Length: 99
Image (cartoon, rainbow, N blue to C red; front, side, top):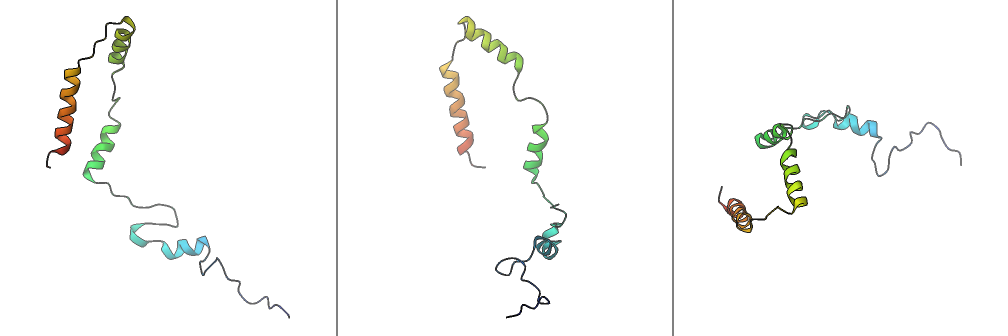
């Protein structure tokens, strides 16, 4: 049997084309330029606020951490279980409160 080289080979498996063919078919869908790898992403107002606050500064106070470490090392650090319980209750109320 002679094989005819003029027949186009099947690209991909199960009818799937090459990556370039896939990009050209999907480019521009849903406002995304898949060919260049760029996609439009829209953040909610809450997500935008979180993103802004994330770069605002450190979430911890290094000075306060040093004070607590020193108090623990000295043996003068005390734990106020009532204050901890109050804050746990406040957090639980805030989580279950209707919005």
